Length: 426
Image (cartoon, rainbow, N blue to C red; front, top):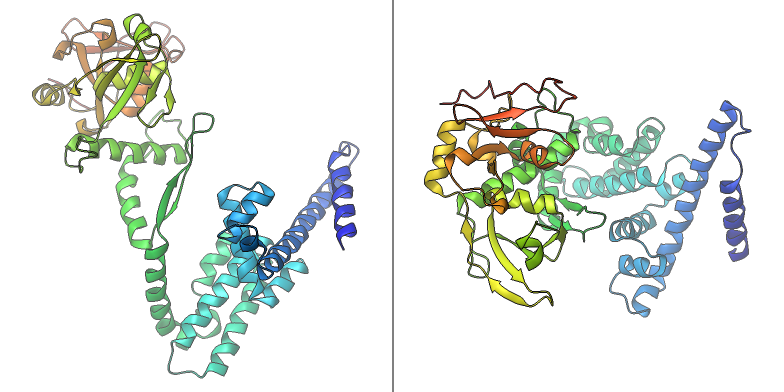
């Protein structure tokens, strides 16, 4: 078998490198479908091999605490796909009919995992019902599994999962309500234990969030995000970007309340380290207290309205001075800004004051004063826009002392000053 698998891998590699342009359209589609079938067959083989390795105790024998950890080391997998492969191997080993459907090409790997997990959930729920016998429960479970395998011909994995949540309504409508109540109670308890949130190490300027919430907590999160995720006129952000920005807005609001628990005896805050020469001349790149580098533009934006702990370094990297934490825009001044601007002052933005930063018209790092006539409230998105070097927007004091916004020539060739018409300002 080893020789066959190795030969198959070599043949697949040769096919992947072959020229595709001679293929007609129907041939291209047929090849794509065949390649998908090959991928699923390989996934089925991979799943069976992982199960066999686990049964033999190879992960533990080679010093690993889990099959997922062993897969990460042997196949150089990231944590998430390693866990997914280990879990799929475990659940399919207990569901031979679903594994066979995967081998026969009736379901793909993700569909198989959903069907197998749903089958086990249904079996556990039916076992809790006093009104049916174990034999009847087993028959209904098998019927639910068969129904889901048939549905897999039309439904992708995420839709199969949704249907699986109410599969008993298809196969046993008279028992569905009672069984669903027991299943939900069991699911709630399991979800509470499984919840969690992880953050990856920075890669190419991005930190990936992954996690799981129970249904109640997810509803709370969605309720908090939804008001901040509505697209506005001219908002070109994708829905996922709006959700990400909304989550950060909520966290920033929590930081400004002063009600978060202390961390190491200090209020929740952000420290930014900048070299002495860069600070004296012009802000360069910096490092946060998490050890991650940030760009000069980010430092300038943070310097507008953040709790900054200046850590001044000498040429050899020694700490010359550790400044005291200070809030650049204090309570009375912040309240005065909120009364004057009524929210984000960028033309026609509707964000209220609590979702805004105080931006210095003349930068604080260039000696700009922290005074009412040198400040303007901007939401996080428009604050980034003003600091973006190529965006072209400028903000300056108007004749009446209130900030005017000058659009880039691409929006208005005359660059006529604009103000927010949504928030009537004093």
